[in-house]
Image (cartoon, rainbow, N blue to C red):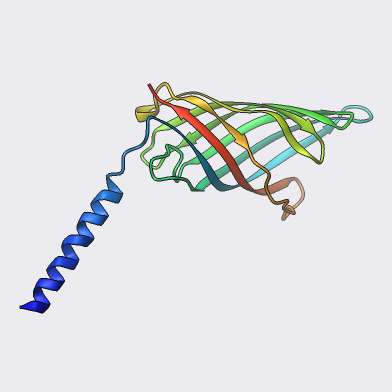
Length: 169
């Protein structure tokens, strides 16, 4: 009987713990540090000496975020362009995050910086969404990350380290 009681208690505690994790609600407002990985392809066009135009397309996934963060386990697809001139660059583009439940978060990209040093201004601005993320606002800023070597020419793979803030009405 004692063995049965201990087993029953373990099952009940396990269910309570599991249900609390599964039913964790998404926070309507917050900030978090998130981690992920991305890969993409690019096309480069030299337009005179010291000037380049690069178009890119990338996909990625957020693999580490707080339980209440709308970006937890989200995937994304981005398309953008980068113009480089005299060691500086400006980049613009669009980005769609897809959450595990199918809701989407839409964003624009607007960054700049020095070649070889990374982004020093701008970031990703959230401009809306669907489902639970309708009307989302906020931003995502790139944090310093380790450098990676591409596995093949014309493509890239990178670790993603970002700070994200959001507010959903």
